[in-house]
Image (cartoon, rainbow, N blue to C red; front, side, top):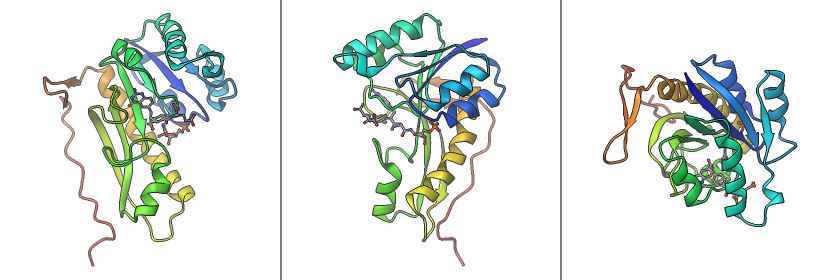
Amino acid sequence: MKNIVILISGRGSNMQALLNANMNCNIAAVISNKADAGGLTFAQAHGIPTAVVAHRDHPDRESFDAALAKVIDDFAPDLVILAGFMRILTVKFVTHYAGRLINIHPSLLPSYPGLHTHARALHDGVKIHGCTVHFVTADLDHGPVIIQAAIPVLADDTEHTLSARILHQEHRIFPQAIRWLCSDQIELNENGKVVNHSHNPAGNALISPSLE
Ligand code: NHR
Ligand code: GAR
């Protein structure tokens, strides 16, 4: 069974979705860069070891990432999962976990990498928005895509309503992606693209606003 370490920075609802999914893997630890991350309490209540590596205790990204990697590697993870983890990671860190580091991002990548994705999508007036689970590479939010969910943007959406509907989809696609990884159904090919050996059919077209 694969060992998994989950990194969080805040409320940890995606981490909860993973813990609640009863996946065939061992969630070895939940680690936060913030001591007050709400998700830590939930993990502790589930009997999962937690740790805090505070980025504020380190003078630069290199030393923070080195300290973080040291704590992570004590758990010998097969996968390291960013679930609302908010610190950009150094090339050295990302290289150390190449092929094992996964992120969930609140946009349809490669659209809207980085922060404030929902506000930017609303500002642009796009009619379809979503979320992406991808392998992490040094190229921020541009690693190979595993699964995406798309939803319509509604005329009266606010950042609050849009992010809530996307979060609901995050909680659906993230456990699916990790399940595939835990059962070795996902590979990276020589072009760095994801090959999925599961027999899932393609999803449906989403047209927004819909045709009449
Ligand atoms: N690191 C690398 N190298 N590559 C990726 O693809 C990464 C990564 C680290 C985190 C998650 C990502 C997201 O899904 C992620 C992907 C934080 C920032 C950011 O700007 C950007 C993207 C992501 C996470 N963080 C600020 C920083 O200075 C701090 C912001 C804050 O603390 O609120 O690190 O969106
Ligand atoms: C989620 O929407 C996640 O996609 C996003 O932050 C939220 C965390 O919520 N991640 C990023 O923006 C990464 N920069 P959660 O803590 O409840 O899972």
